[in-house]
Image (tube, rainbow, N blue to C red; front, top):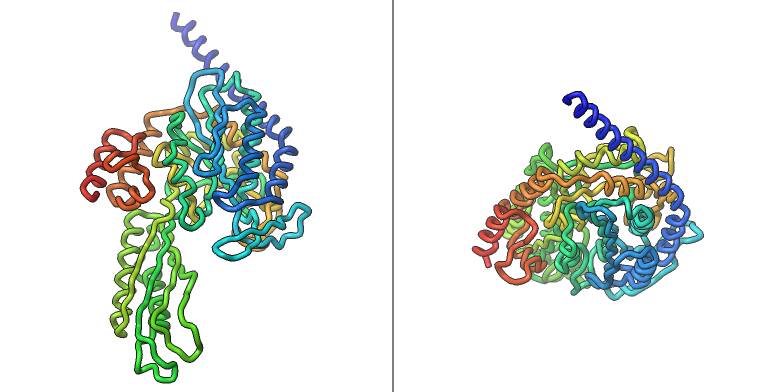
Length: 487
């Protein structure tokens, strides 16, 4: 009897492995067949880009294609967001797949037959509009994924939620938007998503490659504003006033000393950048005040908090030393994009089946930020990069994201489709994955990375004292104590 049971077990295991191998081959072949249509979608979207919360034509195209596939479709989420729901023929987990849709206020310089000629109004200026971060490729790859999976519906375990998100680059002034608003409007709850995956093209990674990092991957982004107040005087008699311009120059140097001399950079990187300075109206008048603004990037919870405190202290003390005053305000834009380690470990074989182990590369921290980070407040998450640089090109010669010369080779967008589809068929929910994610969120809350005022400002609670629902009861108690005690 033992021999019979043993033989049956071996047969069952072999059958499962053969089925998995067959599914991967079927997925990969289907992804390659759909590639010409995916490229067509991408080039159309590239030619007609739209800014955040204004992706009307983009949303219409997505809705039309999802309805053609027979998916349940929801529209106008977080203004222009679209969600497609595919319910498989077999019971299983619910997996979220996310692509962002918005373009940037950048005028394209790349000589392409489908280059953008679009212009629009942005912050009171007429600007060009360009997919200078590759979100057009994300939409196309996710549409391709929906096409492949919809044709394998009867073999699919569980449910797939295709999330097409607006305003990843930020909402227009005075508006909410992006992932935080998608979460607020219930995209992770209806149906409840067990794990979520996101994708990003990279112009300096060769086509055919996937790059990933477990744990902290992309930086938290905080924006700061510093207002320096002095005393206006004639430019020929600086001693009769207090110069906010020279004070600001000292403050900028002081901020860089925080990075180079006060931050433990072997633990995690820190970046402080002043990107804008406004002050003065005439060459021979020292102005009354000056305003400068910039961004802070951190990859560690404690270092983020320390950096904020040091910016305030440095700014105020330098201003005081010359008789000026300074006001500092800091606003959190995104959290650290953190990849749940257990989910990463489980997912890597799916990547390897898609493109070969030699093409799956572990990478370093990325100081860019992503609002995909907000989805992890609701479920374990994994965000990874797909190569878009022409084969053989030196990454140093490839134009970076957010520039007029940004270029993507779209000949291997099937890589993203294969990765997404294999993830869906291979995913197995485990208590270990959920606990690893809850532990990380708990640590962040307790270290106040997500400060109470940000929780309330983003309205992640339906009303005061209502806690985030998807985390464990242990976690809920921590959130209640923190937010309740400061409300």
